[in-house]
Length: 170
Image (cartoon, rainbow, N blue to C red; front, side):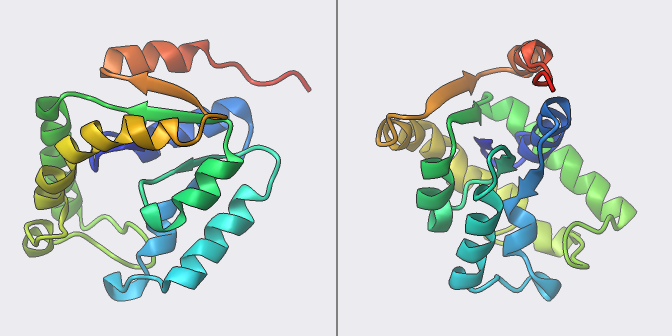
């Protein structure tokens, strides 16, 4: 599951994983250690490798430092590619909610208003990455011809696709 920050990757991936009855992995949780310290690259890659060694899974995240592992082991790439105004509104409302409620994200980390506005914070990160991802993702996916690319371009389209997914027969 990929998409610009704030597009709803984690929420969507959790629902999809539950619907399919498979584990869900969140790359942000593996990347952001306590105090917002970035997990060392080898450890992050080891976490992605261990998670994706299973037969079935749903993982969300855009981290290029382990794309070669996750994408090589996946069979489907779901891309939440929503218009900028939709994603920006989601980034703003999600960030405001997290700051106001002091919601714990990963490893004890919480968003602050100051942190949200930093260069690598969600508001500015959206502007740095949204249009670049829209340009780069098709070619990146083409480099992995075994992947089925599902490009969902609106929340309504994503909800309809998700409704079509069924639990595998047991």
